[in-house]
Image (cartoon, rainbow, N blue to C red; front, side, top):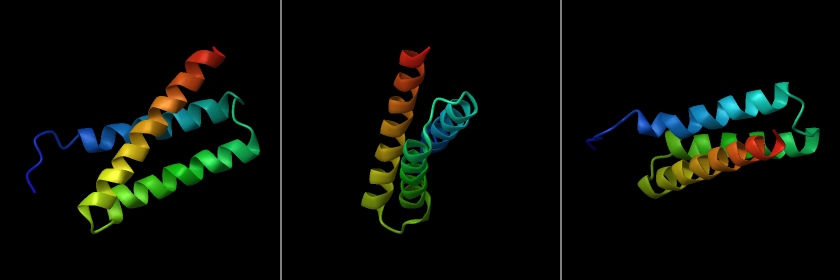
Length: 79
């Protein structure tokens, strides 16, 4: 499959990971909530990068994008 902009598939996971680390280091994540967000990140990354199905890969990318948006909104609202 030819990808026009291959770096875009890495943008959402990189943003999600950066926001998770930043919120955790700032103490904005509770242990239970942080564990849930990390689990969502891992499941989405598995679906996006390690699945053999294009549908599961697209769903993983959508989950990563929604997670990144939610974490950015959470960060901006807590500031």
